[in-house]
Amino acid sequence: MNKKLLIEGMSCGHCVNHLKTALIEDIEGIDVLEVNLEGKYALVEMNNDVRHDELKKVIEELGFELKGIQ
Image 1 (cartoon, one colour):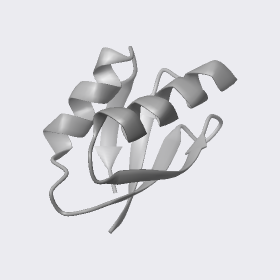
Image 2: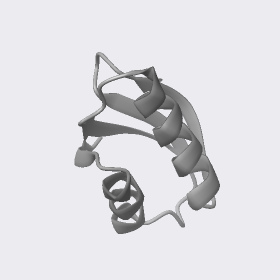
Image 3: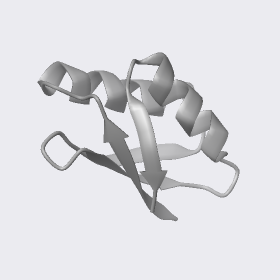
Image 4: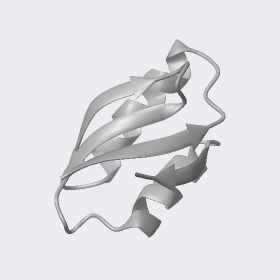
């Protein structure tokens, strides 16, 4: 299932890479399709076992804010 994560706080390419790496390494069952700095989102493919609170925790530990999931 594909989801769009709306993320605030990314300011550079390093932020994009850091977020992508953390999502892939810290959450089992997720694959990052794209992280868009200007659009402030990440497109991910994830299985049904991935919990939204788990996504929020990983993103916020990086210093970003998860604004929503579409």
